[in-house]
Image (cartoon, rainbow, N blue to C red):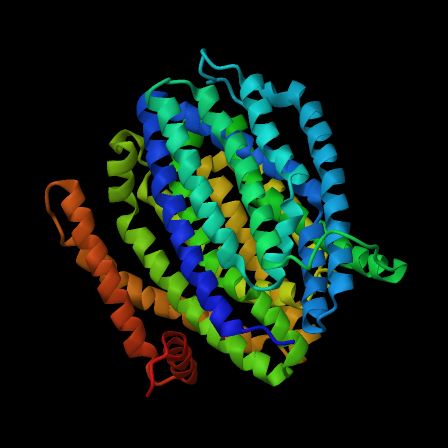
Length: 509
């Protein structure tokens, strides 16, 4: 059975974007309220604990991603019994994971003080705060989290996005009440527990309504369990690498530079991370469709799709990088105050970090859709170890610059070459030079759009700062995109991209 890939991807993209807009605006209001009510150090604590618990979630080991990969074929073959058995398998796995995360989280408590330099707010008990954050993480594993796998496998992430949008709105309204009415940070953190329970219950109700024939029942054959574990062996390394790359920065900054710097950096990283999440919607929308295409279509057809997606990625990531570079400082000045600004050098480093991280998404989504976790299973672990070593060394010599640049170095010289070679050698069946040409073209076009856009923005000197930011935003919306169209309008990838947009919008030539 083929999925309605374009139709589903369009729904996923629409609701994913709506979800991310809500997840940007409302949490942004909450973060601003925390800065004004409690201070920048509270944001530093929140970022640190979130990073620690992301590390504990390594216990999941990729069971969800591996099982969803096997669901692609079960759906294509309309094999109900096998899909139910896969659901049952992931349900039991998640229950075990929840217990492991709880135990590991409790064991880590005595070491919390060593992860914070010294500037803990006097009125806060970090252990109570940590336990509340741990509870919000652990509960999700026991409350029907496995049900979301069916929506992912059927390329119906739009349903999950709708639920997430509703729940997030409720959560943030509660948090604002707890901040402004009660001025209680413990209650603010507790709202995440309520939201987690509500989210999983709504996913359960939606799954029973939309896919009533799929329940967690039955057992997998021994051979299939072994096949899943063979995928998980690669995913273990992959998850370790991703978690270390994503969380080591926060822990190192907190331990060596303090919560104040952590809070300032967190403001910038929050914007970068939110933007990366927005772009992640694009590939989350298409991932199941790509997996279905890999099962049902030719390699040649999939490579044509790959080229179109990479062209689109070059354009979108390049434009977002231009916007970050031109708008970052004015936005942070309005949002957190000029006293919480970092220098322009950090902005350059963060823009490089963002571009290099996101430009390789197309390779990773194809590798994941094709189940290629074992072929380069050591890459994420080696990258994580190098990143952590560079973090710990460079932070002592160049401070925050060292923390950001260590990740850039690992992505540029290890992740991109290794991951792309694995995909091209094991799936497409030819060399990776064509991909490098795509990346180089994307980098050149980024610079050709960034420089004139930034120079135009530098000429804008308006008051108040909000008006200046709005005018700059209009410049960043128009100038880079016009330049991208001019540079690419004759390319095959651009023409394929326009055809796909017309197909989605149902526009006839």
